[in-house]
Image 1 (cartoon, rainbow, N blue to C red):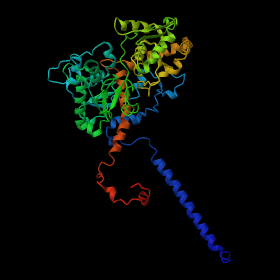
Image 2 (image 1 turned 30 degrees about the horizontal axis):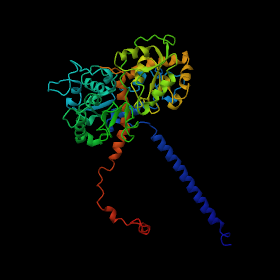
Image 3 (image 1 turned 45 degrees about the horizontal axis):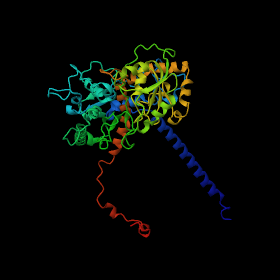
Image 4 (image 1 turned 180 degrees about the vertical axis):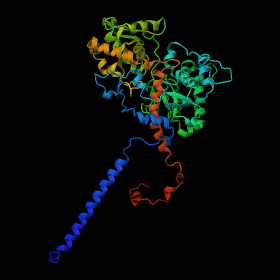
Length: 499
């Protein structure tokens, strides 16, 4: 009864509490509106406060995933956003994503010539570790050696950046101070080292290739640049599947430039860390290609090694499935006995070219097909493709699962179902994108060299973030030895027999 006889006190308390809550809510909402308004700018006001700000500024301003072109430029969209009515990016469109043409700053080690140009029989004068490429460019060995020559072209491109008069179109430039660099390039010609020098000579303990890898590991791990990043910002080319076979397990933190991941465990090489580069095609380009659906009489073409190990078993299975089809060419072939010339003629006169997994998921045949404007039919479930984050291969390639390809009549019926209009559209796309896969010196805007540098540049921001995070506690003292002994342990650790 006493509570019911004092209503005024309770009423006043309730009104006061309600007023306080209302005022607090209004102030809270107003403060959030102020915060949102003051932080609405999407970019940092001053990029100069950031290390290597030029690269970060370009990545930030362009925002590769949501880049908006000007009205007079075709759009460069991800594969998930492309529909049948949208043209794939032309050669210059992808390059124009980098409005500051020189994006990547690269420091290159001055390794002794035994690691690079001496491997292709260049003899220096002892005054410089590098050839004078303004006077004469050392030639890379021909034949199948050329398909894995990627480190040669990248090295030439960095050397030429020292004296190039026109910098437009470049995606990388050499710097002479490693502290200014975004990445560190290791000029080891690992593929030719394997191809030419992997056999041990009589009375020699190890092959020259193995000894060079041992020297390389010793050199790199002793450098301040390697210690500073743990090797994570180093670029090492190992395009031949068997190159760097002895050193790869010790140099794995680096960014590898590879042909595929077929002979690498995923903790050593993977798509998140590394870069897939195209092979250099060995057949001749189809210059001034005016062919059409009717002037290419062969429906489906394959010439190469049929009996392979590992994933290449599918080749012989497909041979038995297709060998009796009247408009299919499926035969053994090699570079011997004018093999390259015959393959060039065959691909130039075919509508579709088979690219089947061999000993590893990739092969040079895909890039020969692109250079021939012969629509590639890819049967390789584990294949990784160059710059697929910016290029939609489904616009100019046919992908077939291995399990489907081995079904009776499945593959040939699929290919026959592709009619003139669809084939012509894919043929036209091949002519638009072929330059992305072209290696040349001097390198030109949008060719394979520049596309590889751009792919490396897209790896740099996550590398920088990991490095910066790893340095968070660099000023903190290391934990004392035995420090855990001073921390009282829960009683149940003893009771449960955990000590």
